[in-house]
Image 1: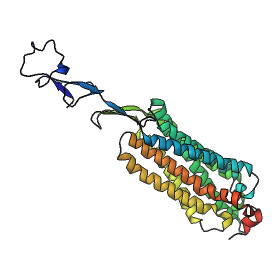
Image 2 (image 1 turned 60 degrees about the horizontal axis):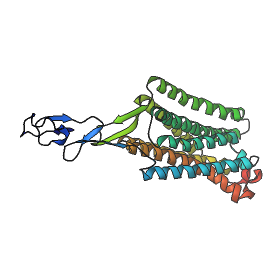
Image 3 (image 1 turned 90 degrees about the horizontal axis):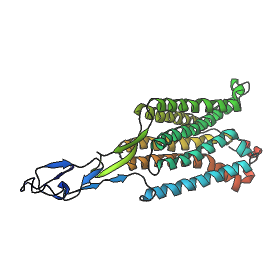
Image 4 (image 1 turned 120 degrees about the horizontal axis):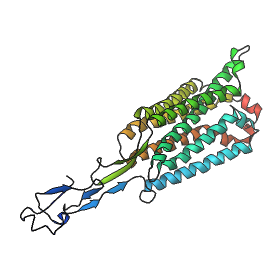
Length: 324
């Protein structure tokens, strides 16, 4: 009980000149303010400690910052490789514009981690959820567009195929625009109805005030996550079905593995997120963002960078079409 007591063996008049905070063993108790807590002897109120993921007090913050910076540098390096080898077959394969959009959205996903660190405010609470939801949806939409392109390209190889007219850059770009716009609309409705906001949790742990983000509309938050999961699941299923195509379409197998990791991370994240409180909820979410983004970067782009940098003899149109 957050209360202090004064001496019961003496009358109130004897202690009129004494502050109730310095007197013990009393029948008359009073509560401390919400931002304070009784000390161990119950004789005075002391300020509660504030808990959030801080740059100064948490080693996890330093780990996340270093990891994010490292992945940012790697992403920029991969982006530079793709720009330098712009005209090579491995970069052109499966729509290089989509590859660049995917790399930039991945880059922004790593950057949005910094919104989850330090003291949360109303603005950062809104930006952190919406930003990672939109950036991830763009990334997964790009992967879905790549997967659909693989499916269409394989079907279009048959003579007189109906699918030939769908082998177009416009199809991929339109798919990205439609899928990412749907997530953007979900986030707009969420922010309009009940946006996330800063919250002080004084009840979860004694003597601690947790500064956290309240998601506002729970339906809005899980609609955003659910739609992102839906896009990832569709991408995984399509890529899984065409994973055994010849090597000229081998990106499908890399997409399959990246979406498998992506879906596994976010499925595991939900119960972990719901079972934690305070800064550890943020830790779970940051871990999921970094892991899933790194999976996309590593599984889809590292094999291409390996060929471009270490196996340039394979980066010619003849070899790409002849390999089985």
